[in-house]
Length: 266
Length: 227
Image (tube, rainbow over all chains, first blue to last red; front, side):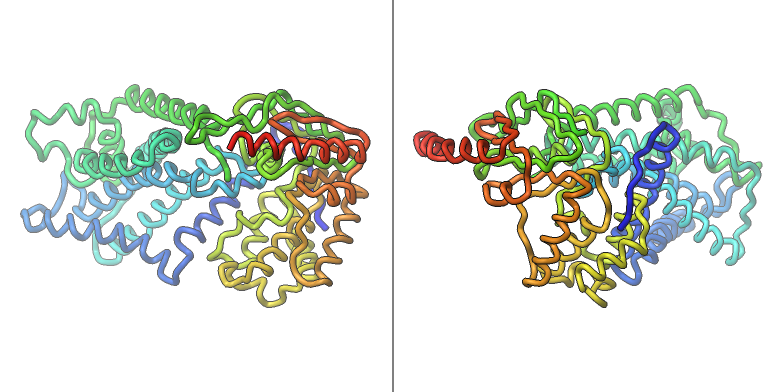
């Protein structure tokens, strides 16, 4: 029989939380991708398909490079970075509802479920990015890492913003079932203004406000500067990114927290 | 010690809000087994979920010192596509329990054999219950939450469950909710009777049972009048 110990201080409590989040991540991996033999494979294929489709369209339009970055790498970095943000929103939104039964285990709390999903989304997209990047290298695309910091920084803030918005959706969907449907529709539209597939220097200047006021766009463009000296992005407004990330995360977690009493486990 | 302070729980229904627990306070010290008696729909299971932390009260708070189990035999947390072993491994991870000890205990207790390594979705309801009960009993908690002692499986398994409950009650505290007075009389040394959202506390089980029995016709009459 197994004897349990209770955390006696902050450090031990932190260790317990890390252990629970890790356990949830492993469980979610099996639940999301491990149901079929090709579950993990499909995650890669989905992103690869997105890259291939937009690559084809851009090639048909006569583009081979995007300002010093090979086109497939440009698309891969954009689409995976967007996926980090949008999947955080879409997977965290219904996370508590889908895992209500886990709350019966006293060690599992709402926050653990949210964090584990965010980390899983980040980790999955990193693996997909590295795997497809490797395939690009093997097929002759030049990929160099000139400075990993912008990439790490951008993905981190995209995860934070996605987590905040996901938590917000999670709280709001306790009042209306349509929240996640509307969110999904809005995200589909936002994809085209996110810089994942088109940079703003490819569209009319009257649309340049998107770069000025859109932190997602700024972060996606910023992440690409990690892979080429020639790829410049000077419009990163760190103040805006920090402000948006912190406000989104704070508001999201607060809304999730105060609406918790509405959840009735039956 | 588990301490409930001024707990209120309201549910929204089609006819308005229904108060299931109305400013309820009590303490459950480590030691004596405690029973919560109440008719069906009185709010016993809700109270148990709030004690375990699965549900948040509308107001008030629960303070817990020591380890508290999930409701014994609860299988709702199992992921059907994962094997019994994988589900067990998940629970061991979150509670930091020794996996091999738990596996040995569950195999011995539940007799699932090779089924332990098959997806839970392929289990019969009896096998599911056996696995759930086995895992619940494989980990040592200070408090065990029990929502109606319903023995599952064959006679041998029922006897095992009975023995395990008795062994547990020597070292840990059983918190049992039931509408059956016999269950409470068999296991508990202290009793709470839940009626109309309020809680009546009795240190003597027989007094509590008497109170509960006198309450039943009144409550049934109240309900029929409301209908």
